[in-house]
Structures are given as structure tokens and as C-alpha cells.
Length: 390
Image: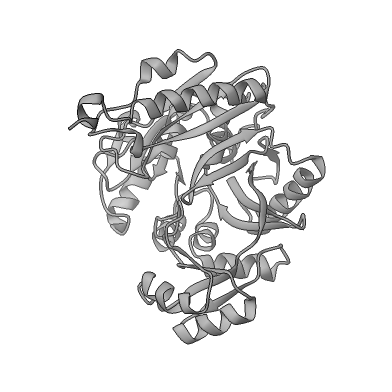
């Protein structure tokens, strides 16, 4: 295929913050953008020339949307892969529907990884409470019970420490027809490898972030990871082989566990921009979002060199008190802080409303600035003296 040059129109399936930041980078490169998302208030809508607010299962509307753009991509995995497969019959979609189908289904994902020899935590596919109990005993407790689909940010996961927990955990997931039970791993760290791949198997890695979670949601990431060259190079090799086996054109994020015994294990796959890669907007020559545009439009991949150490921290809806936003002026006084807000209208606990990146000379100084930023955010949450005294 020929290059899809600036001036063309990129269609994004999904209008969340990932779609918004992809649209921003696409527009900077001179592309027009249209977005398809059922949510009339989706964050990417304001940056698009057209917002198609219809169901992902409305094939007539989807086909009309596809005819209005030059290429399609998607920003999250919860789009029906069957709908994307239909579009793929007559339109260019990157990454492909087959990649989406594997990444949005934990059974297919785990089986793909295991069958191709990629390292994963021991797991079993279960269909009944009896199978769950037997598998938990076979794997050895503790284990984690996971839904097959729609699990993200810690949702759809239940830790089971004892056999007695199995009955409760099965009910907690709604007594599913199909689930995954996985051996719980003692972790040293979690990290992710994000790489871009072109049509001719050309590829480029982002610097590797080390990730820290709270309540199943990414809290913050630090780059450089501090994991050491041996771990990083081994993970890159695994991630690249996964991407080539899948035939990805676009972005692929591979989430990794590093176990206490130094074993590297694949946790999950995401064929799109990733929360842990947001640092690249401010600290890399080419961000993950620009790299996606370059890859799917058959342009040369950009240089992703790190300009300097960086910390990226998510800002959740918990920080909005009675609908009132945090102290942005106070936060923006901190040197090296870059604030990104997603234009989401309704904050709620656990909802990703934005993030900030902190840049500096070294990680020690950056961590000190992050401590200062957290103090400003937390002070804003403290009840006033009048409220305390009733």
C-alpha cells in the first residue's frame, strides 16, 4: 500500500482519553480526525471533525463512518471484534480484527501465549465452581479468578487465598459460564513494553516504564525503569516476537510481571496506546500516539529516545471533592510538571480524569517534586475546619 499522507482522514473507533491524545497528535501532523463512540460526551469528540455517536454493533453506521475516512484504528479493546472484522472486509483497519479478538478475550489471549511458548503464569480455564475448586488446588493457593472479557483497571478480578474463598469468588463474578484462574505470583515489579510496528515488519520500542498500581489501577510509572539491561532486553525480545506472531501493524503493549525468582512473565496484551506510555508525550522525541499514526499510515517510525527521566501519575476522580477540581494553580507552580486533563465532564472514584508528568535532572529530584504535588492534591481533599467541627 501507499503512504497515507497528512491531509488524509484518520477514523478512530473509541473516543476516550487515548483517542483524544491520538487525535491531538494526528492533528499536529496535519491529519483530519473523525471519531466513532456511542458516548455523546466522549473526550475525543471536541478534537474531531465528526463524532459518530452510535452503537458499535450498528454495522450500517460503522460502514458509513469507514467510508468517510482513509484508515481506521481503535483506542481500546471493548469494541466488538466481529464488527471490526466486518469493516476489515472492505476497509483498512490497523491493528487487525484478529489481533483485537485475541487481546479482548483472556482465554484466547492466554492460550495464544501458552501455545506459542511465551512465558505466562500457570492458569486454567474453568466453567463451573467445581472446576474452579479443583484448579485452585492443582495450581496451589493463592490464585486469582478473572473474567474472560471486560476486565480492566482491576475490574473482573477476584483474589482467592483459601479453598473456602472459591464459592464466594465464583458468586462475585456472577457465576460465569467461562473464567480464568491463575496462580498468584510473588512480584518484584510490573513493567510494560510498548512497541510500534509497520507494514514491512519495521519496529521501534519506547523506553520501558516501571509501573506501580493501587487498587488494581495504574498509579504512576517511572522511566528509566531501573530493572537493568538484561531484564529489559529479554522483555523486548519477547514483546517483539509476540507482535510479529500476531502480525500487528500499529502499537502493541505487553504488560509484564517480574517474579521474585527473576522470571519474566507476560500478563496482558493491548494493541493500542497504553496508560503507562503517557510519559512519552513530554519526555520522548516521538510519543506513543505519534508513533501509532506513523505506523498505520506507512510513514517512517520516529525516534523514541528519552529526553530525560520522568514520572507519570494518574489523576483519578477521587481528587474531585463535591465536583470541585483540585488545586491546579498550586500544582502548576511545581517546576517540571506537565498537566494533561481529558475533558471528562463527570468525575467519579477510580475514573481517569487526567495525568501529570514530572521532568527533571534525576529521579531523586523528580520523586521529591511528586511528593510536593501529592501534598497539594491531598490538602485540597482535607475537610475545612468548619466541616471538621460540624
